Image (cartoon, rainbow, N blue to C red; front, side, top):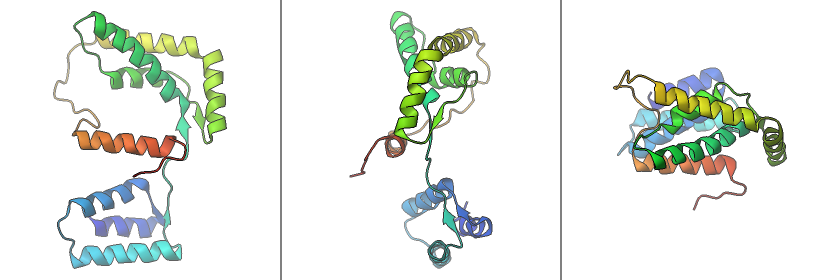
Length: 178
């Protein structure tokens, strides 16, 4: 999508989403030089943001604690299996399968996240373990279909670093990018 189209959409909706912001940033980073039209669109966007005509939607202000718990369980189980056999498991497939069968545990504060973690450890740990186990069993038993399928986020190490940076920004207390 072009900068002009993103700005048009933002002005029409009254919101600049994090995805729109990221796309504008990507275009600006990869372009050797912006056109006059692109500069004018950026100027229009800046004016709309300053006047309140467009509101920037903040980045993720909540977390799903269940993702963290499922990943922790899946990583330990997958590592154990991979260490004792010659098969390689897809952590993303396993976590997604389990997460689709577990209740979300959203939190907007550190205190809320701590509460959700404690609650899950006392009430849901066996269910988490069961679903991760089922996900692994399903993964190991699945036929090899659609070998051409594209995995989300399968890309360069720069993108992985960018994803880790974003994760730290949204989850780490007092994280500052240097």
